Image 1 (cartoon, rainbow, N blue to C red):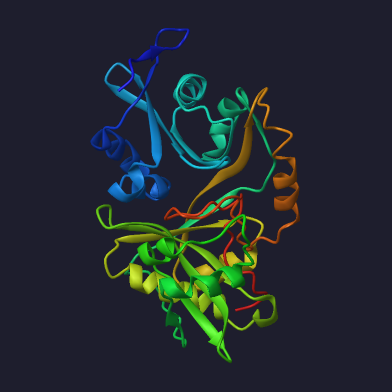
Image 2: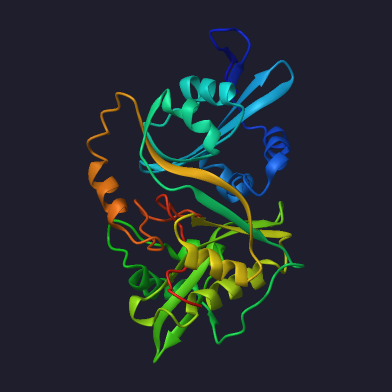
Length: 313
């Protein structure tokens, strides 16, 4: 553990930490908002993450996490603004990242980063009591079928879903005449926290408007609720059809937050990320387009894992 660093006012100390008990205790204050990071405390994911905490005396003010891998990678921030600012200055400071944070944290982030614009995200959740399954003919997808998933997601040699991600997660799909036309899966799953995140929901453009996205999301959710207390997902706030589809499954809104591409002020990578930003701006709300090989359990979604793009369900 690195030695603590005091901010310029001497009131906030920041340091790196690998103390999962401390991290879990803080993240559990809002487990639905912190779902990804709670799942990242699992042994399988923890080695791929770097954590920092900001404290004032014995009180933890904020937590920050950055995921390892090719730039840009996910970064999560939670807590008080002064703690977040100190963490970004001294401990958690990726050059380029996709940050997830509360809207009120954006000013603290903007002191150190250029923040790309984007609509707020909606964190939705469901439990066994609220879940309303959508019966349909779906099938569990296996790791050997990952090439079909990648064709559906239109991923190429620069980015792909790995067979490991399918093996460690839960994926369901729908076939029409033997062809995979819709799928949904998981980003992260934690049996310890009894929590999981649904993602990678997509229906082929030729087969939308038939309830396929709702069906595969329902199947994944049902399987997860066999051992999870809550299941969460993200959807863009400007995607009302997707929000409505999830509500039909029993998902309810927990909070709205920001998921933005950020670039460290003065970072030499700023110009290099311009093509990525243009690509994201052109994307439809539900198109999964990870920016790097997806070999970890939760792939990188640009500010959008918006879920189903069907017009009506």
